[in-house]
Length: 234
Image 1 (tube, one colour):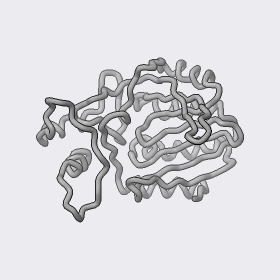
Image 2 (cartoon, rainbow, N blue to C red):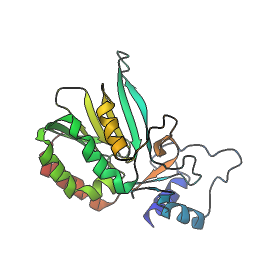
Image 3 (cartoon, one colour):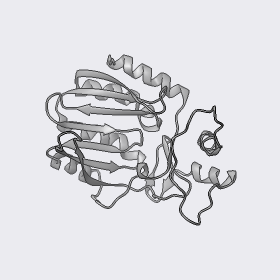
């Protein structure tokens, strides 16, 4: 089971010559530091949390500090140099509605878009970006449909779609969260409401606690195919 094997690997102590692993969230006081294999297997095989279904790209930590659920909240990006704030929305959406909602959120960006494809297949700590500028939205959507499986189920792939001139951007990130940056959030909020996604500014997302990404070599190949189809470059 790939989730389980990857998770157990991160729990093994590192030798001095081993590559460092990213720090993990500390276990809550009184919690079992390391569950047995059967417990992990049951947890990592779980996709459904009530009405919310995860994609295959990510799983919460076994202690379930955050229970996955649908919803969105207001947020903001603050430029560290200028202090300028750009309003944002962050949304978690059940897998059966995620891709459709992502495509619908592209509509307010207009008919011609810039795209950045993001991968960490070869670089576990630093992502690599590939950019395509000036692509028609309908052409982009046609290509994205052909790679829906990778975009949803690969924990090493993300995509950002931007208006070529205005500060407007929609991301489907490696955590399979939808992130919108825009001075005017209302058009995007209307789409989320039409999709049945409710605002909850107290919601916490799977990326905010211990979690596990997973990928596969076939997705690395598929990513290269998508880069070539879109004519994207570094």
